[in-house]
Image (cartoon, rainbow, N blue to C red; front, side):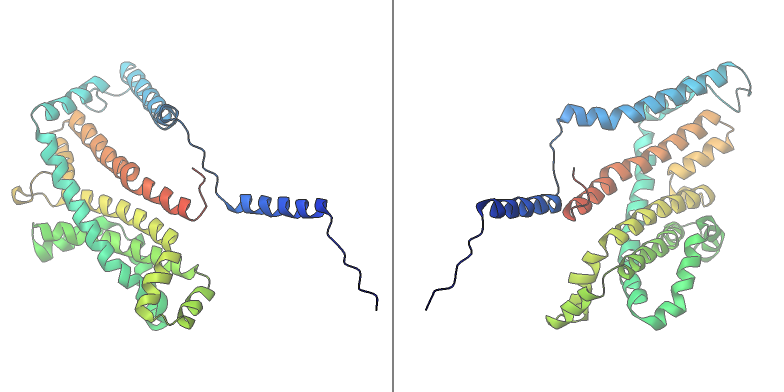
Length: 297
């Protein structure tokens, strides 16, 4: 019998197939170009410095034009002198620490409470129907509305401060987790069930990692709400037992009709908020996106 003809692939065809496969692999692989440190620092620091310089220039021009009286719009140098004064006497560290440690503790407690709450709301239809709209409504409710009730319930104590912070942060974190879980492909929990994962393992190893982008967005918003809630509580609930935080320092400037003190307090509040964003949440967000191949650098 005649042996069947063997068709051999042309070398050019094999090379083309290899090239196509390599190209597809390259598309799936995130590229990481290492930018020199000086260029990175320049790219990160120059735009905000230029924007701040323009803001100071406009402020100085408006002040010099005397459109507003001095007690309404002080000169930038007056605000700088107020800032230098609290730095020189060392009071700035106590003021900042009073607010920052309250915000961190309240936010950490909010994460501990909101994470299981979000899981239950996302996975139990009865609970979602019962308290899902309530969480959405509480997220839109201004945190300052809770301060008078908290003062009547708990008095001028730290409990009042933390109560307001919790109610400001928990709904945002829980809703962020619910939104993240809703976007998880249904096949992932099914694969976990097939592999023998129980409810706890499925939540810890499948749902939470898959919902991490939405969860991280919710925690960022929760931090912003907790910081705003803290400032509202410190402005309204003032007492010697509570100490002087950034909100109380802002209230003191208003009580003494010191516009430089008020503006200095506003800048400090903004500085802490931006610092937490840049030092904590921005690196964490980049790490998550890079791990998922969504950010090249």
